[in-house]
Amino acid sequence: MTARIRQFLRKRAEDGPCLVVDLDVVRENYLAFAKALPDTKVFYAVKANPAPEVLALLAALGSSFDAASVTEIEMALAAGATADRISFGNTIKKERDVARAYALGVRLYAVDCIAEVEKIARAAPGARVFCRILSDCVGAEWPLSRKCGCEPAMAPDVLEHAHRLGLTACGVSFHVGSQQRNPQAWDRALASVAAVFRECGERGINLVMVNLGGGFPTRYLKNVPTVKTYGSAIFRALRRHFGNRIPETIIEPGRGMIGNAGVIEAEVVLVSKKNENDDVRWVYLDIGKFGGLAETMDESIRYPIRTPRDGDDLAPCVIAGPTCDSADVMYEREPYALPISLEIGDKLLIEGTGAYTATYASVAFNGFPPLKTYHI
Ligand SMILES: *Cc1c(COP(=O)(O)O)cnc(C)c1O
Image 1: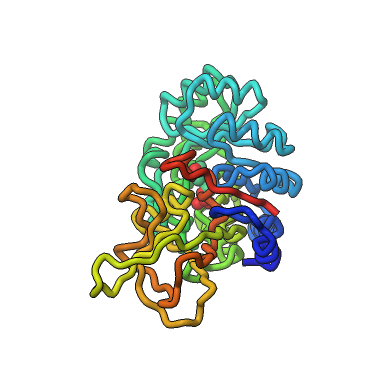
Image 2: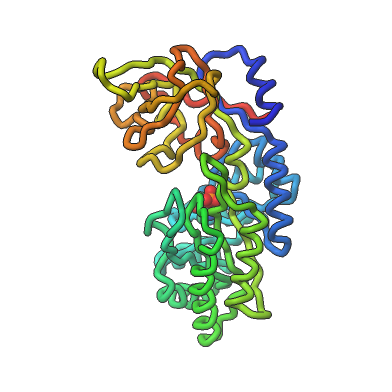
């Protein structure tokens, strides 16, 4: 929560939940990444928060962009990025979209299998490709599945195929899992990357780039290590696995770039019990899983919640959204402690919500509009 956001919310007249993002915090985060990893290029993961104000700020600061679709590529271009600063990082792309990206000037693509390599070779001849490998995601609060990436042992075949088809097989990428709280997680992944580099070298393919992915955490209820700590751990891991021949590196922070820059203001719609004798109350807000808080799925991300009654005695609450969908319950397995004095109409502040919120909001489920956003 920053003074600028507090002041903005004091003056806001409209009804309904909203996300307010302080762009000064995004700027500080970008500079912290640039300082912690001085030899690494930053490719902001656009999906975390694609607001034009955010993209324009980062483009002006010199950031590059990791885009997952043609629309995200167009948004980055509209914000002032040039095509040579954009990576098409999704491993699942229609060949038509690869052709559109190529026409827009994009020359860097992610692949994780032979079929995807063949699409790129046809639709983006001569482009640079990197192969994404799977990571175990141990230590991540929002672990990624096996959906993107191949087993490291398969990567040399994928890259060799790219090389044979006239593409530039440039490197390897991985993602250690989002909200990765362990800075050592990159070490394990880099051991696998180095093995892919060696195997490709033996096949006469000279890889030059490691895409270190995202995973940098934002602070929710628990403290997280600083970006500087991550930078040092990653640098040590690069030294350990590559010695004096450290390759070019890029990072793709999403959550770590913008999570802590945003606050959602929400309102308590109802406080009730299911039985007079229950200890746990149900607190229904005007925002839930369908309004932008999708990352509460499986109670994975626990956001800090501030109330106007902080300091009063606490009692456990189930926290749910306003829709009639029974899945729209955010914290139940592990109830959330909120002040006993909490009342209908109270405004709550849900912190750390700058990433993966606004674009997750449904269009009009139950008639609720998408989350309003302000980037100030
Ligand atoms: C989502 C994503 C990121 C960003 O991840 P964070 O954990 O938010 O930093 C980076 N790279 C790729 C390929 C992604 O899909």
